[in-house]
Length: 63
Image 1 (cartoon, rainbow, N blue to C red):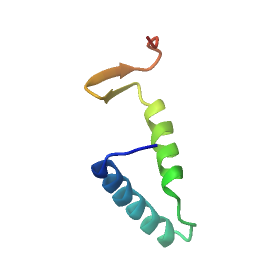
Image 2 (image 1 turned 60 degrees about the vertical axis):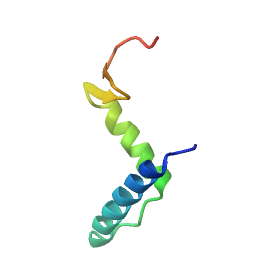
Image 3 (image 1 turned 60 degrees about the horizontal axis):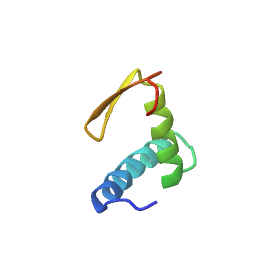
């Protein structure tokens, strides 16, 4: 997967913050792929998300 430099930077910051908190709780660190998987899962649990300039509601048919 090719990501923009800004997106990579955002993921690095989130991963660092997550892993600092996990370390404080005695948990193992996560890899970037695991963070992306969890973000995708989180988005799928929302009733509506705003992505790429579009509102997407859960249960909406994919065109």
